[in-house]
Length: 144
Image (cartoon, rainbow, N blue to C red; front, side, top):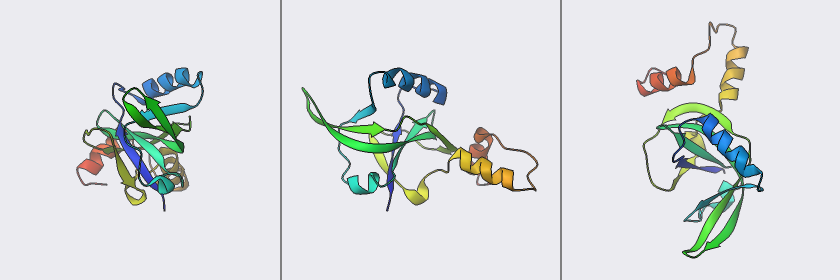
């Protein structure tokens, strides 16, 4: 069974801004996001789990978690989430702010946009694609 994490992407207002920031960080080695608490469900997380980023109030993008590392600083032990550099855009799902990370069950995880586009391209009755923003708004209204 796979489980994911969801976290607010503090100070970031777009996927492009996150991408640019992480590209600069990749020069120094693997992407590592430090967090105070180590996930207790480590085995489920490392079985294909991702970190889903909340940007401007919506889950918008995810990165696969490849490894957990123990980090140490003057305040004590932390957990380093080692992330795959690929940013996978997801359907927008509204999510309120919270501190730290939360678990996200597989059944509740937003679908990848590339999967939605593939489905739309296979559907001959599709008259046009809907923007992620419009889809999120229609979901919020209970119309999707």
